[in-house]
Image 1: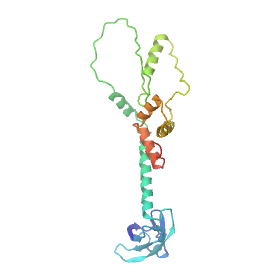
Image 2: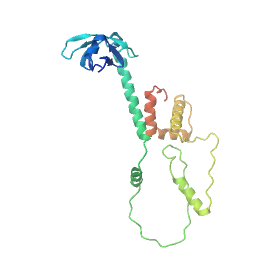
Image 3: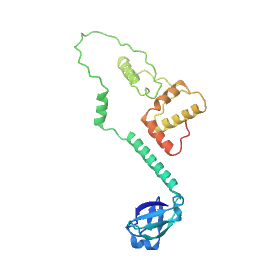
Image 4: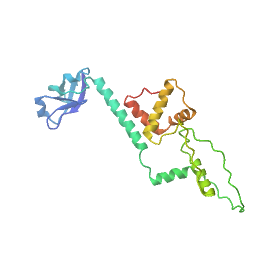
Length: 231
């Protein structure tokens, strides 16, 4: 038989083990005491034998409240699943935590290059030269601010902003909603698994999204809840 230690309920003397509740009339007189109890690992619903820590047998207690965990292995598996879910939820919550102004300033300063100030150059008329920009095709590059900077310069130079090109029907676009981004990633993974081809932009975005903390946290919760068939 298996053996474990526990503390009887401080009021009625009942014993709780893996959410199963054991009780007998004599236990009310031992309420609040630390005890040792023995049980059948393959049948937790069959009751427990309760002992003093010094070894004296106190009596037998029936299982009055039975849950789905009728054996020890099933109870341990469920406890591990609950811990995995809590860990994944904690990681996801940290990703959605607001960033303080101090941390935001530190992140911005860390990305700046420290260079010596250049001497004042002679004033002269120059013309703006716009380099050809490659459109963003991956999750890592779709957030670049180059396009916004070019639009602002053009607006200052001509007095009007360059009209935005409308996406062609069927063209892949990265969703703004985090939940929709994760669902699109699962759909693309399922298409890959089924042998269906992906577009160049879809495949490039999916490859970059795999390494993003947002995908890693949501995929951990997805696996913990049993949805690990994708991919």
